[in-house]
Structures are given as C-alpha cells and as structure tokens.
Image 1 (cartoon, helix red, strand yellow):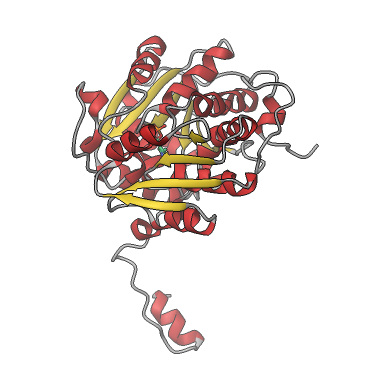
Image 2: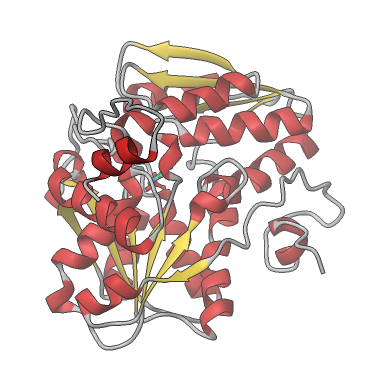
Length: 339
Ligand SMILES: *Cc1c(COP(=O)(O)O)cnc(C)c1O
C-alpha cells in the first residue's frame, strides 16, 4: 500500500476528531538508516532517523500536518509562527496546501538560506524582527486569535503529531532502542519523543543535546543572547523547558551541551562516512552520542537527524571549497585529481 501520511496512518492513536480532513504532504515514514561507522566508533548498533526525508526537509512536518489540519477544521484563515527557519518552511508549505495564509516572524540574521527560500516560494508573508527567536515567539503568541492559529510547538497539536517519530522507530526496530539521542532547541521535539514512547509503553533513555552557546537547560537558566552555528537550536528560552526536564529525568537520561566544533565534526562524519547529509543542528545528536559514549548502556541507539543538509548551504560550502576550472582534457582532470 502507498503511504497515506501520518494522520491516516495513526488516526486512531492521535488526538483528532473523526472526520477531520487531513492536510497532508504524505509526511513521515522516514528511513531508519544503520550507521556502520558510528556503530564501530561507539561500540553499539546505531541507527539514524533521517527526518530530512520529510516533504519540507525536517521533522517539523510531523506536527504541522496535525496543527494545520485542525486549524483549518476550526475555521482558521491564517497560521502564524515564529521560526528559526524550519517551522516557517513547514507552516508555509502546509498553509499553501490548505489554501490559507501563512505569516512567519523570523529573528534578525542567521536564518539558513534554504529555509528562507522555502517560505518565500510557498508564498508566506515574512516579517523579520530586530530581535532573537525568543522575541519573535513573544510577538506571535500575542497575534494568535480565533481565526489566526499559532503553529509553534507551544501548540499542543505540534507535539501530538511529532510523537509519531517514536512509533515509527519502534515499528522499524520491533521495540524501543536503549538510548535515543536528539538535539534540543525549543524542546518541543524531546517532549514529543518522550510522549510517543510513553504512549507506546516504552521507556528508552533520552539523551538531549544543546549547543554550548545556547544551553539554558544544561545551565538551569535562560540565556538572552544564544550563539551557535546550529541556527535551528539557537534558542535561549525554550518553550517546553519543563517537559524536556521531565523527559530527561523520567527516562534516566541527560540534557548536555556540545560545542560547535563537536557539532561540525559530527556533521562531517555523517556526510563523509555514512553518506547522510543533515543540517548542523541535527548533528548535535551525534556529537553528543560521540562525546558521551563511555556512558552508554548496552543496546541499540537511535539518533534523530532533524533536518536536511541542503537547508543550510552556506555552512556546507564554506571557504574550504574552491573549485578552479582546468582544461577539458582527461590529462588535465587527472592532474588536478593528483591521479
Ligand atoms: C526545530 C529544530 C530543532 C529543535 O527542535 P525543538 O523542538 O525546538 O527542540 C532541531 N533541529 C532542527 C533541524 C529543527 O528544525
């Protein structure tokens, strides 16, 4: 059977009125790819849940299909969100599909180009505020009303839809992994992972990782000027803070920090050794796994790779990539290769 998208697949397990029309781009059903190089390095079986394979290139589609379907059923004429990029890309695509407006509020600077391109092409109205993500979220919370649905992860429908990732992992492995690693930004996704596992009576250890320059939960206090190359997790006041801490503590897990250098090393390893290209924020899950590998219990490990590498071409093609043309002759090409 062809995959019908998350709502049709999990309708009986999701909080959605029977008969609600699904606004779907056939999200979900993403590959769980074995990672042999990483497995050898950490001496556990490691799998990568490749969320970049979703329709807009990130896990945000899992929650957006539910949030936009319910918003439309409730009579919304627009969706609004604050976004470091992927939420806006997803909201814009699902709003376009539904035939309603999308308004996205971006923090100043540092929105990865691929994500902005998506919001533009899907026809979202884009406003950039002279502030950070946390400022943008404060603004959209005040904009939401009966006809304007807030689709940030403070909307419980987002978390509800995102929990499907845990169910897919369990179906693919025939049970939960021992440890599930993921990046933590606004902390909706770690909340959703834990919710999904609990709903399925499973309790893997949850390891969440923040970027060292944006690690409020690790330090136990909000940060006003978060800084990291991993723009998707450059968040100083996580909206789902308490639920993230509950996921950590109830699962016997951790929320720790990884440096930008560790993130970039993991990003490189994934692309060059596993053949999987994710965005920098996604690689925080693997950076954390590598740095904490001495503490792994026995059993398999899943790392959520939250978004596709093409989202952030500027980080991918840094100054190290300089391609000079040579003569169109085999000898010249061989010489250039050093063959
Ligand atoms: C949104 C996002 C995150 C962070 O998820 P939270 O739910 O905010 O913790 C991480 N990586 C990518 C690629 C994202 O788009």
